[in-house]
Length: 284
Image (cartoon, rainbow, N blue to C red; front, side, top):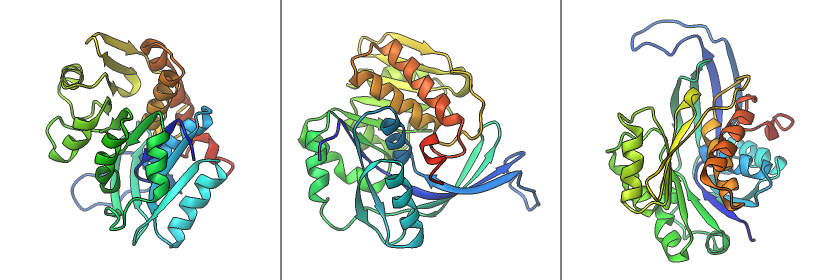
C-alpha cells in the first residue's frame, strides 16, 4: 500500500439536527428544522476531500463490528477511500446540533479509546511510505506520534478549536510540521500561528469561517485568503476540505497563496453537500 498521504483519526456515524438556534442551558422545547444520519469524523472528511482531489490517501480509523461500524466502512468504501481498520468496542457516534450559520454543539455518544493491540502492519508501512502523515486529535493517533517521528515524514495536525492552552493538544503540536486550527477560541489567531512557527513548524494556518483564512509561513510572513462564495447546505467538514485542499496543492508544488486558495475552493465544495463531501451524495 503506497499513498501520498496517511491519515489517522476519527471516522464516525453521526446524527445531524438543524435548529434555528443552539439550545440554551435551561429546560425547554425546540423543533428541528431538519435532521439526517451521515458519515462523520474529521479524518474521514480529510480522506474524502483528498480522494476527490485525486491525491492517493490511506485512512486509518477504528470501527467496531456493529451496525454503525458497518455503515461507516461501507460509505467510505463506496466513495473510493482507501482504508485500514482497527478494532474497537463501539464505533464512534455523535449527535451534532447545528444552526444554518454554522453553530455547532457535538454530543459524543461513544468515542473509541486507543487500541490495546499493536498498530496493524499496514499502518506502519503506510506511514513509512507516505509523503505526509496527518494525525488528528484522538487517542489512537496520539499513540502513533512516536511512529510518525521514527518514520521521518512531515506531520500535519489539525487542532480545531484549540484555546492555546489545553494540555491534550500539546504532543500533537510538538510533533507538527504544519498546524491547522480555527479561530473559535483564540484571542489572537496570528500571534498563535507565529508562536507555532517559532516553535519549529514550517506552516501554521487558521480558518476564519466566512472571513477566509490566515497563515504564517516559515519566514513568519502572514498570508490571507478570502472565503469562496458557496450555497451553504451544511458546514460539517468544511474545515477538513480546506485542510485537504491546501495539502493537495502543497504536494503539487504550489506556493502558499495558491494553496490557500485551493483550500478555500475545496471548502466551498464541501459546503454544498449535507454530507462530509459530495462524493457521499450518491452513497448516502
